Length: 422
Image (cartoon, rainbow, N blue to C red; front, side, top):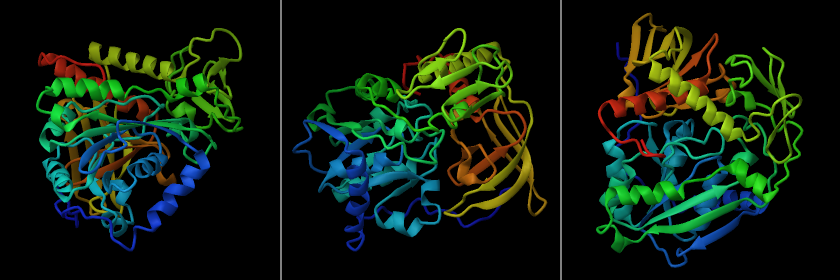
């Protein structure tokens, strides 16, 4: 049964920034710029003027400050996920933000972006659609090339380095105080190139530009992070032990990552590497461990065995800008996609099914808002369900499986899978 709620008006036209809010933005931006002192490299953007499309990588909230800083006098309209509007819809609408429900096919958003261009502003888009889980590139939608053709304006990119290691998604509780982050602000596609380039050629440029690895950057630059709790939360992304293979026994505290099942321990060094405290050091690079986990999930998908089993869940809904407790139920994520069944607070049955081919990735949260713990949020064009499982589960594995299930379905259709695109 579909519940009736007041829902976010996605069709309301985007605005220019209200005059009385304009002085506030530099205050917010400059505080972060002053603290982290980013080194910004500009490539052919010195004379870039709106309207244009700006594509940015996404690792932390500080991304927005750097984007606003490099835009200068160019006014941007930012695409922001629905939970960004939580308890502050009025403010975000009046600084020009555009609402999006993650990983949905949304024709309304295309119309909104066209309006921004017609207004003479900059469309600011974070195409990875979520914070990177471990400081490396997330999957990009192959529709980007088509969007560039449709908007028919120059395309710039802003790729930042150091934001993840300063405030990793797996523990945003405190800033690590990284000074000297870096960013490259580049004109990627000029207006007169758009008609000459194919969609694939445009996508190739974007994917190539979006290659980044924050932990490699930290090591190469010898950026020392001596935070005594720098490993806290790392087990959320590195959930599978490479020694014993257990997926539910990893723990992290202080500077230590440990498997409680077999007792293996690693130290996260001041330069972001992993160092085994005894025995073999299979993974020293955090993203390498993460990609190994992906390969393990991919194998389960290829063998047709992937399943979370049935998990008990608590469900909240976000139809507009405030959470509403929807009810309790069960979640199964398996070879056939997501299946949610439950009973809401009015004792009515609720359900949601999403096939693997319908969603190329999913958004997860770790210890979201300190409510029920780790969660998966599943979106339709009208609603977002925040689903909090209990028992043995890994939301990171669920996110990886969502992507691998999608790729598997695409291969069955004979679609060529290109690295970095979905």
